[in-house]
Length: 336
Image (cartoon, rainbow, N blue to C red; front, side, top):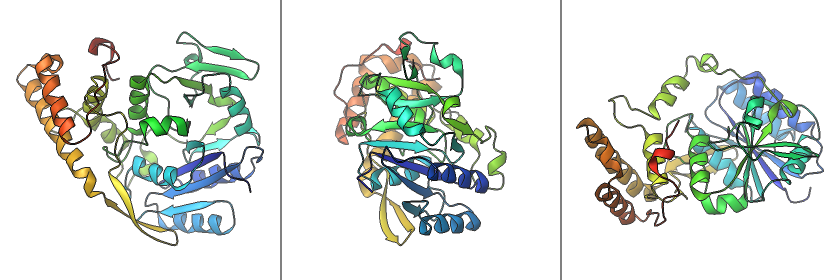
């Protein structure tokens, strides 16, 4: 096989049947666009992990990493992302079944009508394709303009983008912040994000509620709520980072929280990188400032020169200062 053009990374946490269908559909794909399939299991039940080993040893998976427990979606995806040096990285959820063998070639042909330094992601809502100005109509289909963030379920990110913005942000919990955070950084950097109509390329077999994860530590609803407000009523981590990115206080290329300590065949030992500790402390100090201002009714003071300068000094001191001019006013850049 020639060098891969695309590293398709599938993060897995349970979903026994859907995971198999996703991998089997990829196995039926044509290889005119060389790709590798990288699977990172995030602590699934033993039956699924055993099945993934069978798939790897049967040639249906090119790279397999088994994490000892659920380390969060961003950590798992980054392990797969960094494992393969390819011009394009694709995150494919384990409930997305390719409809046709030529889906990847068709997607890249469609994307070629957009700007090269961009990302491409799915939508199952046809209104998204035309809701923002600038929709591209091409002989290969339609590219919609995304002004927020693309869904991470079948997103493609070129190396030219990740060289600038880095990987998924590992500041968060188990679920739900990876694509929103990356979209925020894409917007800050001024890179385009394009929608493709996923109904032409994939069948989505997953559920939006938490029924697939009952009995596990993952609660999608609670994880999402914590992104905006924590259990004590303080600012959530996504809302905090959104502000730091858009006010150009924090670098858009974020450092990784976790590193691989050891690999034994397929089993991976992951530990927190000591180099992340200054970032953890600075995040907490930034959050404390947010919470203090908001609890005393001075939330609007976040946008004053004094507060912004204090936060910039915090982030400069840990080596993660931005040093750029804010791309837009706070009033026009509110997280959703």
